[in-house]
Image (tube, rainbow, N blue to C red; front, side, top):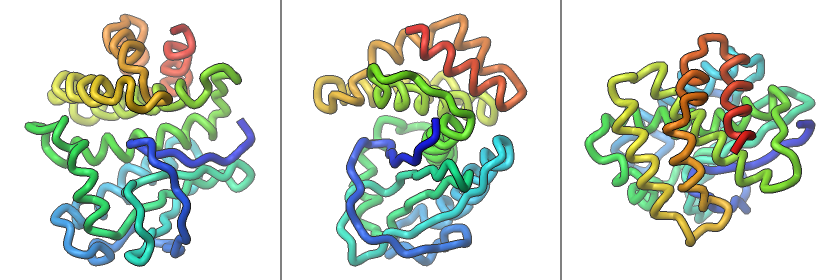
Length: 222
């Protein structure tokens, strides 16, 4: 898949100026968001971890305070340069507006949830780096579905005891979006995937590339 793209967890568009940041996000780049330090740590570890696994570089661009923007986290992949860029808002209000999504994951450790968010965005870059193409029909729909399952894969690997709770919360979040955001209205497909024996097998594959392709195959069979 030789193109660059821009995605986000909540499905909100990006149209703003960006400030380049070549190092991991500084916690004090936020206004006063309580989880800034945790996000700082996760941004570097999770994002770069998948970059190392799949052979692409990772950098960060900060969306400044002067730019009103509702989505705290997006990602863009540059295929020729093999580079995944995370676009992170530094505005406290942006992250607080995102807390409505965190409510679906109430009861789970915040580290698990934030890592899953970064894994979801990493899934988009992995998909492009590995040239996984879902074809022209409902492409964006399946790319988002793939990223959701990629996040589930991350929880399965690193926080297995929280996998079931995360899975249920993820389904609740997507069910709430059903009928509101058309390109994110894939609750029924995600439900089928969660209980697919093929997916359970794919999530347990150790080799990163093999796991990425196996997850894509399960999504493509829907």
